[in-house]
Length: 421
Image (cartoon, rainbow, N blue to C red; front, top):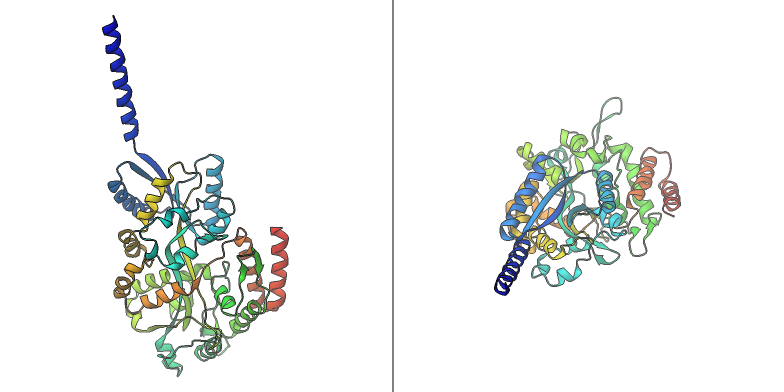
C-alpha cells in the first residue's frame, strides 16, 4: 500500500509539473488597436504583427481596427475602461495625447525608452509630440507634415519667378494677389492661394499664429493663449486676404475639394499624404510644382509648419507591459517603419533611414523632413477638441467679415473658459 501511495504521489507531481509547463507555454495575447477599419489598413497591420509573432512565438497580437473619427474612437476607449478591456498597445492621434493623458490611460514610457538601444536613433519630434505634462506617454511613429506647394507654370504666366517663391507673409500676400484671376463678374476662377472656408481643426491657421509668436495653447500652464498680439495678427492676416485670393473649400476635405488639385489655385498648404496620392495619379504634375520653405512671419523671424502625428501608446492597465513594449519596439524598427512608408507614405522617423528616405524622392522628401523638424502639431491638453470648436468658429467669423480677429478670438476664449471650467 505504501509503495502504491508513493507511486501515485509521484505521478501527481509529474502531472502538476506538466500542466504548469503547458500553462507557461500558452502565448500571451496582446490587444492592439489601430486607426482605421478598412480591410486594407487592418490587413497591413496584421501582416506586420505576424512578423512580430514569428520572432516572439510566445506572444499573440490581436489587431482591432478603430474608427478614424476621434469621437467614435474615444467612445470605444471609454467603454473599454468600464469593461476592463483596455488595449495593451494602441495607435492614437495627437489630440488623444491630451484627452487620454489627463485620464491616466497611458503607461509612462520613459523607463522603457531609457533602456532602449535605439532611443538616440529616433527623431526628437517623435518624442516631443508624445509628451503630456512633461511625461513621455506616447511615441510618434507616423509623421504627417503639411507643405506649401505652388504651380511653377502659373507663376510664369503671372510674371513671377518660379524659382523664387514667397518666404514671408508679405511676399505670400503679394504673390497670391498677382496669381489670382477673376472673370468679368469679379468671381475668382484661379485662386492665388488656397485659404479654407472651414478649418475645423485649425491645421491651416495654427502655423500662422505660432509663426507670429503665439503659443496658441500654453501647454506648460494648461491655459489658452490665443488672444495675444501674435494670434490676433495671424487670424486678421488670413481674414483680410481670404476674399481677395481664395476659392472656398473645407480643409478637412482637402483632397476632394482643394482647388489646387483641379488647376484652380496656384499655392496651397497640403498634407504629404494628399500630395503623394495626387502625384501618383498625376505623375506629370511633378515637373510643374515647386515647394516653398517654412513660411516665416518676416525675414527676421523663423516660421513654424504644422506636423500631425500618429503615435504608439501602452495602456496603463495592461497586464503584459514587457510584452507590450516589445511590440512597440518592433513597430518602431527600421523594417516596419520602412514598410509603413511604402504602404502609407509615412516618413520613417529614424535617423538611420534619413538618407534612404531622401534618395527615394530627392525633390519632395527633403522638404518633408524640414517640415517635420520645424513642425508643431495639436497641443496636448485635455480640452483640445473644445478649443478647436470655438476657435474654428472664430476663424469663420473673421474670414466672412462678421467680426474682427480680436473680437472673435476673445469671444472664443470666453466661451472656451466657461465650458472647461
